[in-house]
Image 1 (cartoon, rainbow, N blue to C red):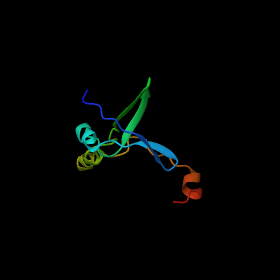
Image 2: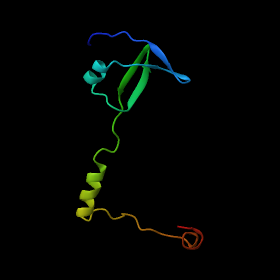
Image 3: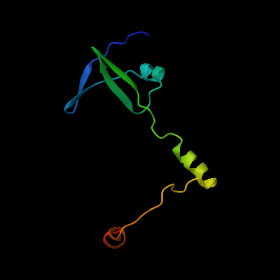
Image 4: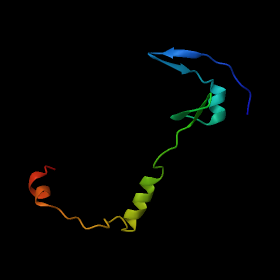
Amino acid sequence: MGTAIRTRIVRIGNSQGVRIPKPLLEQSGIHTEVEIEVHANHLIVRAAPRLRVGWNEAFAGMAEQHDDILLDDVNTTNWDQVEWEW
C-alpha cells in the first residue's frame, strides 16, 4: 500500500462523492469507468472491466474465414412471414 491521502466527501447534486487526487488516479491507471464495492467498512474502487474487448476483430476474422454462419436451421412460422413487421 502507498501513502494515504486525506480528502473530504463533497455534495454532487443530490448525491455525495469523493474527489480523487490526480496522483492517485495516475498511479492506479484508472481512466474512465469504475466499479465500487463495499467490503466490511471499506469502499473498494477499481477499474471496471472492459467487456467485449476484441470482439470486432474476432468477428472480422470469422467472416474472413467464412466461419460466421448460423449453426441452427431457421424455422419460421406463418406469424413470422405474415404478421411480423420488419
